[in-house]
Length: 502
Image 1 (cartoon, rainbow, N blue to C red):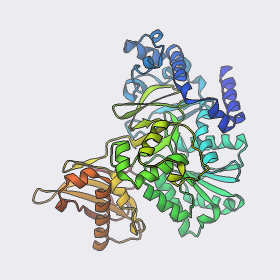
Image 2: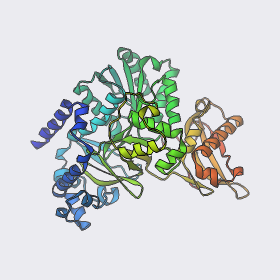
Image 3: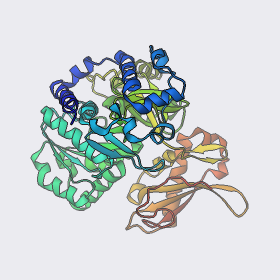
Image 4: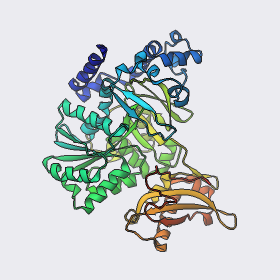
């Protein structure tokens, strides 16, 4: 056993446990990010065999990389040309798995599953993202908190990573109890009934659709969520602010910017950023001002918007997609994660907001005494291009989602749909939306017409291409209603895709 492994792990955990959150950020100002990256590069160039060979193949002399500008010219890592091109041990610091103590597996959504070794030494740094959420949003330092991990437990990164980071918070002194029923609803409800009354607040952590299922099913079983001052932590999917409002209404949440937070994470890099009250307030304002959102993000759909610590995970962009660097058991140096998005610096965000007439946090409906942390922003649309083209307009699933979240529609549908462009008997194109009904709901022509009208209204409001490119007589989508788990569009046990190409 290498003596350096327990020493480095203990040092990292001890530093995390001993450092208050404000002091942590004070000791790591954003301007230190580029020197930290250069130091990581130098260590990887000498200590990671795969990276040494990778540099040689690209004609890079490590000693020539001296400045931040040099760093930004380094070749991009990718899954195919780096992660899948070298054996796993060669991609690790020291060329061995000896420095790791746990493993995570990616979902395989972009190909075959990939193994990602991890170490608690690097996990402590990522645990700060959870501390931001629990301390800055949920005030968990002053309130006894029951945290229920609703992510699936096993090799997948979400469940055990979340559990471990929450345990670190409890060790740090937060009055926090962590329960781990995973994605077993019966066990989740049992924990809520037995333990939630003993705490001042309840936090559910899981994928957005599953958390909504838990909330709805729990209500049917007689759980009064509002009795437990619930808070929500999400990861894994982009959702609309209408959806957030819908879930808030069902749990009785009263503080829109403080009662939930979404994490932006990957199996390869851990948690890369997190929603803050400030980022949520901005996103909610943008949801009500779609032209401003288009000006800021360049598209009609609303991405996930989080803040990140550049000293922990450093973001760049390459051709409209995100590139990240950060220390890990498999270090990432300009790693192309293939998520479409961009980076906005903190002063740049304020410049944009002031140009829109937003001059203070109070203008975003935040408390007058709220002071945001001066961290940059990253926005994320998602990994693949799931758009469909209709009369030259790019139609995004996120636009349709908002239409399904209006009025009484969420009480009829599961939220799943398939968006596609079809051709009728006359050879004309039509926009088709197949919608999944809840188990107890029967298909009805009136319901289909209501959904079609709602989707059309939101497409016209949110998507300027649709409003300007699509002839008025073609703007009404065709909506078909399908039973829950319909085998053609919504087969059970299969990862759902929201678009279908003709």
